[in-house]
Every structure is written in structure tokens, then in C-alpha cells.
Length: 608
Image (cartoon, rainbow, N blue to C red; front, side, top):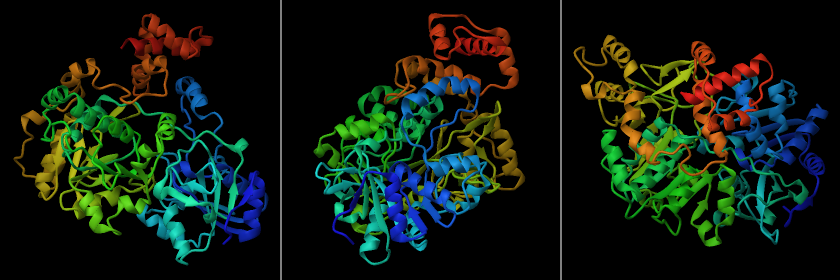
């Protein structure tokens, strides 16, 4: 291996260099999410599209794509947002061609985790999906005989050191495997100075690379999805979770708005404890961990979710392990996240340690130290559905199609059972809306399982906490019924009785018979009015007008055709706020029948 990389300022040229060195059969591994060297990947894909004799296999996960609005109203709202947030981000050619159905057969893309729902309608990607725990992906990459590993990296001023920044997750272990003679690949980097320079274990020397694309004119803005709005149900879930996180413990949080809700609830518990205690009483919360944090928490999370920075600043995450507040395997978030990381002092960034995913997702390797550090661990992850018997559905449908992937969820559930005082917490919204119809996410059974029922532990919905560990099937069903939406409880109970899995004379306790959105809204109304449950607890990339439109657009998204017809007939008043919203949606001066109809239903939704 050369002692320093060959430097390129052109993506096409570096693609040609890769082909000349490894041949026309390229097996390329790319990091999950943000860490992909887009220009290099696109140049290789174009070479392979132009030359069928080139075989290009890409092994990766979470191909990031700019969201695609589905309806005209959604386009009117999201179009300017997407232009603002993603301008200049180079789309990955292989994804674009896959959607068009024009990616040639000599190019194959295998993912072990997909952007949620993006490939449900793609038979090719459904067939090429590799089902793998995150910690097993390394093994599968090595078994492909990978000969190229590509990565987006942050350069040091001297260009003698580089940071893997957002994605040391598998790359560090791949480099170790190469040093040990277990792999033989070229390491190819693309610099991007917008990447926060995470030092420590995420740093690698220039001598690790064989080829490097380093051209400031090719720098591109990082993929930065906006923070999601946190619904009332999300906030209620977060509050219940916060009441079962012990002071001095260890915290892992998964991606999404429920993660932000958990972060907000932890901050509320710590900084405004009286308000938190009142909410606990109003929600009839089960958890007993309600006092402010004295020792604080330590984070060990596959994903460094954005709210970790917020709970560090709030003084919740303050228990250090060897000088580190949180260990993470990868990060992905808003522009604000990247800016905050870049603007930290080196000392502040050093307390956020980016490490191989095997370090956080597994206990093997320095197991004694990990066990000592991860005391009272609570691993918080989100699912789509849960069954009455405690099985969890997080990544796929019962017809076999993959929504996303198991990722590290199973790792953390297994770790919760391997650690003496740890618990797995699965959060599930009690209901979902499909085509204007409300459906229960607590189901009797389902034809696909991500976490089997023998690993059932704690399940949380907006209506409470179900503690399932070590309980009988009948007890588990009773627990799960108590956190289901009451509109579906009778049907679920009847199914359980028919199969003999719960006593024929069992009745759901009266105080658990009122699990409804209306009761939930009443329980938290004062806290909501006081600003304790904001739509965006930790800031937003949306403008004030866009935020004000969100509740109305949510009503439209969940409306049935009958609801929309009523809104069209009813219309609504043109307040100053409504006029600002109409202006933002380009409906202040509607042209044609369709735009006038849009205007009326938006006014109706704004006044609801």
C-alpha cells in the first residue's frame, strides 16, 4: 500500500483509476446514509452504464434521497422547503435510474437498510435486499470479496489526517480487517469540509487511502432532512418513556420524532420538574423515575440522534465514561446539527465519540468495561406495530416486502437481556391513519416479526407503559390491551378469548377503557398551552408561516373524501394568518377551478 493517497480533482478520472487498478469487476462498499462519496459513486455508475462489460456491485444501506411530495397540495408546501434545504445536493445516479427502471443489469445495488417505504414498489430492490442486523453487515461485506470501499471524509488542514466523521460505523472495522489480511480493497475518499471533524477513534491517517478526490469546487451541501414535527401522541409517548429512565443510567434513542419527544420529556423532567410531575399525574403514568437528574445519563447509541446534543446542553446527559458523554456509530440530521458539531470546541467534540457500530450495538470486545459503563441501560426504539403477545413489527410487511430494515434494533433488544439491569423499550403509536381510516397498531397477530415475542420487554404507546418481561401470555395480553386505543380494545379482547389466550371472564379495567385522543388532549391541554409540548421542541428548519400551516395540512392528509367535500362546501374565514398561509401556498390569487377548490379546503382546515 502507498504511504500517501493519489490525489484527484475530477470524479471521472478517479473512477477510471479505480477501474484500471481493480479491473472491470467492482464490488464497492459504501457507508450507511450521509457518508457516501456521491461524486465518485456517480462517476463509477456512469462508467458502468456506458460499458456493459463493467460489473458494479454496490453494498450499502440507507440511500438518501430528497423527499418526493405525492399530492399537488403537498408539492405546494414542500417544494420551496426542499429547494431551500437540498439545493446543490447531488442525487445518487443509481437511485434515480432504479426509480426510472433504467439501471442496467450489470449494476447491482444491495442494501441492508432502506429509506423507510421508498422501495416498497420496486421488485428489483425488494429482491436485492439483504436482511441483516447492523453488526452482521461487516461480515457480509467481507464475504462479497469487496475490492473498493468509498467514504466521504472531513479533511484536517494539513491533509495528513482525515475524519470518518458521520460514519465510522463499519469502515473502521473494515480497515482493521484489511490490516489483519482478512480483506484486500482500495480505500477511496472524497473530501467535504462541511462534515464536522470528529477526532479520536474516527480519525484515520492519509496513508489509509489509496485514492482521494479533493477539490473544493466539488464540495456539496450535506444531506440535511428537516426535523420532524412532534405530534401530541409522540409527546405522550416521550413523557411515559422519560418516567422509566433511571438517573445515572445509560440511554440509546432511535431516529424520528418520537426520539425528539423523549428528549423534550427528559429536559422537562430535569429543568421544569413541577410541570413534568403534573403531566405524569394527568397521564396516570406508570413510571416512578420522575425527579431531576443528579448524576445524569450516559449515551451509547447506534445513531447519534440530534436531540443528544440538546440533552447534553440541558444537563441531562452528563455522566461521563472515560471522558465521553455519548458514543455513537453514525449521525444524520438537520443543517443545525452539522453546524453545532462544527462550531463546538475540540474539547466539546471530544466528549462525543464516534466509534464502530460494533462498539455500541454489541457487548463483545472489552465486555467488562462495557458492562460497567452501561448500567441501568434503557434502549429506546420505535416500531410500526406490536402484537397482543408482545412481538414487534418494525421493518417489513407480512407479504414479505421490506419497509426499512432491522438495523440495530434487534442488537439493542438482545443487549437489554444480556445486561443485568437493562431494559428494551419499544415505542409504538397506538393508531395510524390510512386512506382516511383509523387503524390500530396493536394487533392480535401479524405475518411478519422483527422482534420475536420471547424477547418482549417494555412497550409504550401514548396511553401508557406495558411491562411484559417474564409475564405469562395471558398477563402480556392484558398489559397490551391496557395501552391500546379503546376503539379497538373490545375486538382485540374478543380475539384473545376465542383462542383461549386470556381468561373468558377477563374484563379490561375501567380506568384503561378511556384511551382516546380526546381524553389525551384533555390531559395535556394545560401543558400544551404553556408551551411544554411544542411542535418542534428543539428548533425547526421551517418558517413561522410553514409551521402555522402544518396542523391544517395534517388534517387534509388524514381526511376522507367525504371530509374534503364538507371542507370544500364550508370554506373558512380569511384571517391575517390564513392570508399568509394562502400566500405561502401560492393560492392568494387562485387561477382556475382546482386552485379555488384548494383555497377553500385550506381555509376550512385552518379554521378547524
